[in-house]
Amino acid sequence: MNRRDEISSNLEHVKARIAKAAQASGREVDEITLIAVTKTFPVSDVEILRDLGVSNFGENRDGDGAAKARSVDGTWHFQGQIQSNKLKSITSWANVIHSLDELKHFVAIEKFAPHPLEIFCQVSLDGSLGRGGVASDNLYELAAAIEKSSHHRLIGLMAVAPLGLAPSEAFSKLALIHKAFLADFPKANKLSAGMSGDFEEAIAHGATHIRIGSSILGSR
Ligand SMILES: *Cc1c(COP(=O)(O)O)cnc(C)c1O
Image (cartoon, protein in one colour):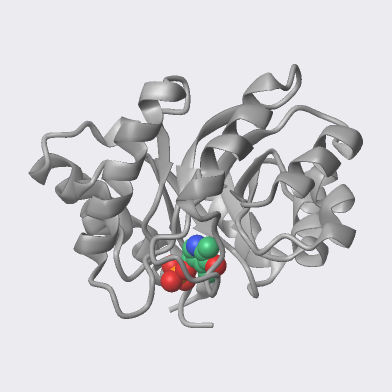
């Protein structure tokens, strides 16, 4: 099978699983945005995805993301750990940031970003900082700072299921955090959750943005 057929077949399979998961929880498929996570894969794969109709792409590293976003039009999502010295560059090519978890990074975004960004605050579901995310104590302060911005828009919360916690437990916890959060930030109604290994559980718990790499592009 050539690369295009391989990616096309994987993509169709993932879309069918998304449709099934949405239906199982009484949700509409079109309220779920599929982000193809292209990290570590070549720009030729991103072009294939674009030709197959994908328009949302995710990257974890500034250098790779910048190069691919220059080559392929689309909505570019940054979901990696943020390093202060890379932030200015990240804001030059990313349209959406999923992994904001520090106030000082938002201060830098306000200063440097050349265009408006949509932002998810990443929350930690286990209190550890291993997989990124703001502890719930600091979440509201961070969110309030974004809401005050006249350029950037807080659109929701993001999380990665912690190792050692069943995805369904992790995402039900996330759904509770989000529900409480919405009382103060009603416009932040998006939920970025779910990767190749757990997106069905994430959809069952309300994910609106799922970030899928290996199920579409193969193992890294
Ligand atoms: C790599 C990555 C993904 C995609 O993971 P897959 O298991 O390949 O689907 C999604 N979200 C984040 C934050 C990632 O780092």
